[in-house]
Length: 281
Image (cartoon, rainbow, N blue to C red; front, side, top):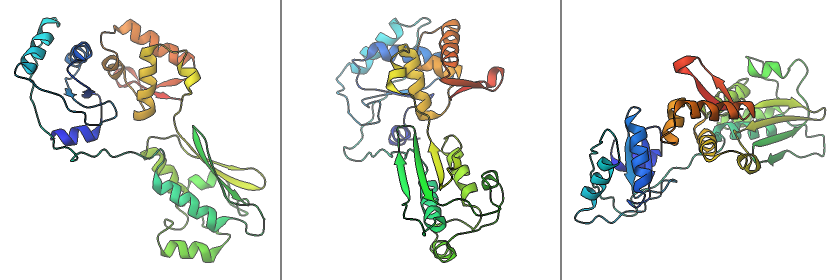
């Protein structure tokens, strides 16, 4: 994979960005962490968000950096350093939506096709830090329950002409499968399963995302904050990934940090032994 593709892909378990060679301490810590796992690459001249900054490379820049690394690691690590040039303006980073666009489109189309037009209430989109709600006037048709929406079920549109038109122009999926697809797309997006609810006068579809408030982050140590932010972006974290994020940690410190997050009901452990990982609650 070429350099541009690696940068566009973003940071991962084996890729880390550094703004400049002036971050030599952080570079050495990351290299030490990589050497204790399955290795990796450090790309210098790129911000954490993936913006291309560039770096000035002098006659002895790479040699000086290589010496700093070998002199400050034990056993000594002799990195392979290469210099590559990327033309300005040729790099674009792709941003990811908080929620799957297809699921949002399906939810809105369903709301228009299934709402009760006899009421004066309106379809509402309510946006919060941790969720997005679609409120639709009217309740489920007789015979259709919340539980059935997540399994195979009949399509009973309140407004069949609108539903048919939306199906013809591909605004909705195959009849009777929309809610199933919404659940599927959210799981593929590494989001919690969406929630369906009847309030008595409205049907509510809630998309949730993993979110931790700033007030809660303030009571965590810096290592835990890094882990939580990683989880909010990636969806899960392993012990090895935690060690890479916070270079130089021993197993006991990692265990205490993660157990503290579990006790605070911020994360939950899943899997067994070597296959164990953690997710936000």
